Length: 55
Image 1 (cartoon, rainbow, N blue to C red):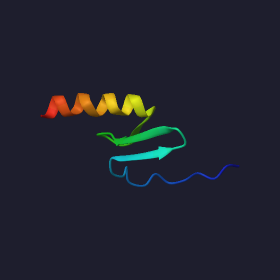
Image 2 (cartoon, one colour):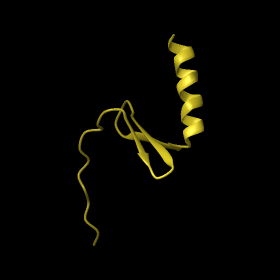
Image 3 (cartoon, rainbow, N blue to C red):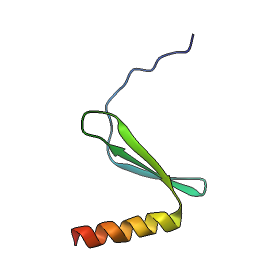
């Protein structure tokens, strides 16, 4: 039988580079995390879009 890991806190917003991709982990309201893998070009486009939305 596989071991069940208890669900701990959702954790903070986190971005890591893994291999050639960039992993974005966003905590969600109500629990859990949204995990998105993107290329460096996609991350740059996301950064530009967020900067324009906030700025």
